[in-house]
Image (cartoon, rainbow, N blue to C red; front, side):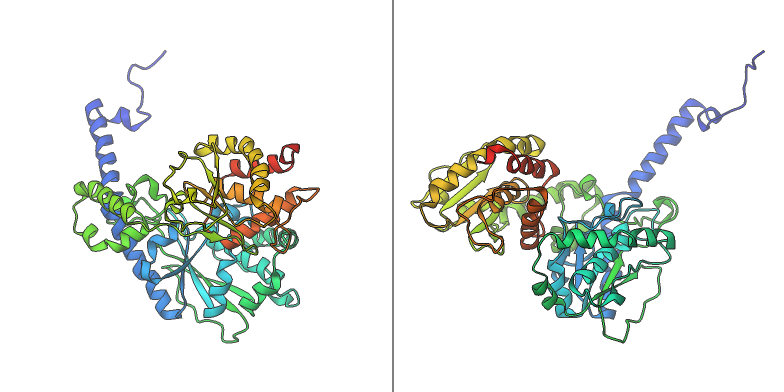
Length: 459
C-alpha cells in the first residue's frame, strides 16, 4: 500500500513549483552577481597589493607563473615569466617537465639572489600544486644537475602544511629518474651553473601565513612561492564579493582582457559599470591589437641561423634578412610582402589551425628537405619559420629543421643524422624551449614531427 502524500525527499518537494523556480533563479542571480567582472577585477587588485607587499619586504623580483600569475603583478613590476604546471604536481602524476625547463629563470635568480614566483588557485585550496610541488621538484632537480657535489641541496623540500610526509617521500623517490632524463637532454650545464653559482631553496608564502625571515647563511638562492589569493572555504557569496583565484581560467569571463591591458587601463575599468564592461573591454582589446608592435624574431640557440616568429613578423622584415622563410598556414603572402623580396625563398606549408593543422603538418613536412636543399646552394642558409601565433606549428617545423640540419654544437649540417629517436628529438626541443620559453606546441604538433622524423619520408 502506497502513501498518497509521501515525505518530501528534495527541496523541490518542499516548495511550490513557482517558489522553487524563483528560488533557483535567485541563487543563479546571486552567483552571477558575485562572480561579476567587477568583483573579479577588484579581487585581483586586492591580491596584487599583497603580492607587492611581499616583494617590498624581501626585495626580490616578481616572476609570474603563467598564465594566472601575470594578473597579480603590475606590468611595470614583472621581470619575467615561469611555466610550472599544476598537473605536474598532482598526486600520482608528479613530473619534471622536459619541455618546460624554465632555464630562463636561472639568470634572474642568480642576478638577484632569488625571486618570487606568483600564482594562485581557485576556491577550496590554500596553494596551487604548481607552487607546493612542481616548483620544489624543479628546484631539487636543478640542484642535482648543477651542483652534483652538494648533496645537502638534493633533497625535496615541500610545505609541510600542504604536502604530507608520505607524498613528499613518494615524489623524492622519483627525483633520480627525473635528473637522469634531464641530463640526457645534453644541456650546457656549465653555462647554467655560471648563471646561478648557488643552489636553490624554495619557501612558501600565502596571505594566511606569517612572513618568514630569510636564512642568513647565504648558501642558497631563495625561491619564494607566493600564493596571491587568500583561501575561501565556503562559497564566494559569503565573502562580500571577494573571489579566490579570480585571474584563473580568464577565458571564461575576461572578454579578451589580458593582464597587460588590465594594468594599463585599470582606472578606466574601475570606473566603468558592470553592464558596460563587456563592450568597453572589447574596445580596449581592439585598440591593443591595432597598436601591437610587430613581433620580433627569436634566434634558436646554439644556432645562429635559425629563427622563429609569428606571422605578423613577415611584413616587418628588412629586405634580404633571411635566405629561407617557411610559413605555416594562413593565406599565401602577396608579392608585396617583404619575404618576396629578391634573394628570399618562401615555402608555404598548407596547414590549417588547431588539431587539423597539426595533422596536416605530418604530410607537409615532407616538402621541407627538398626546399632547404635547393636554397642552401653551398652556403648555410639563414632561415625564418613563422605561424599565426609563433608558438605551435612553427615550433614543429623548427624542431624538424634542428633535427635534420644542425649538429650538436649548433652548426649547420649538410647531411641528416642516420638515426633519429625520441631522445634526440627531446634534446633539440630543449633548445627551442630554452631560447623561447613562451612557445607552447600542442601534443598533436609534436606527434606529427616525431612521426615524420622517425619515418622514411624525411629522406
